[in-house]
Length: 99
Image (tube, rainbow, N blue to C red; front, side, top):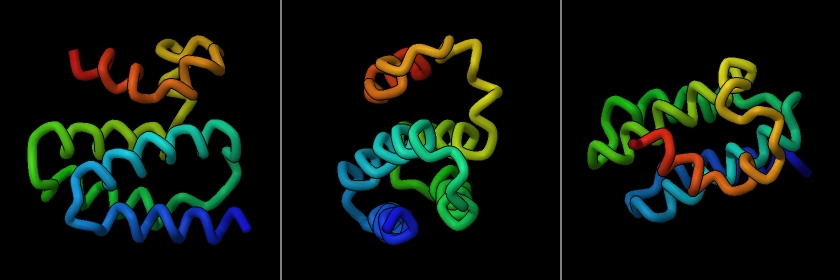
């Protein structure tokens, strides 16, 4: 069931609707926090593509950040500080990182 969810997010990342793509990235951060052992390799590949070829600078940055987080969430321990609500509010997280 969860693998089907990752396939759906992968499909969302391939859409031309920036809002849908950004929403998928936010939800992927939440999903990684809750299900750290799933295989995110195809999603990370798509995020790398978006980081280079996304339609705008903000989307490219969010793709880069999300890919880094999915690949190695421990790197962001200093940022998340083990606060579950902080991860759930990924939109707030993106705002902090963009500043």
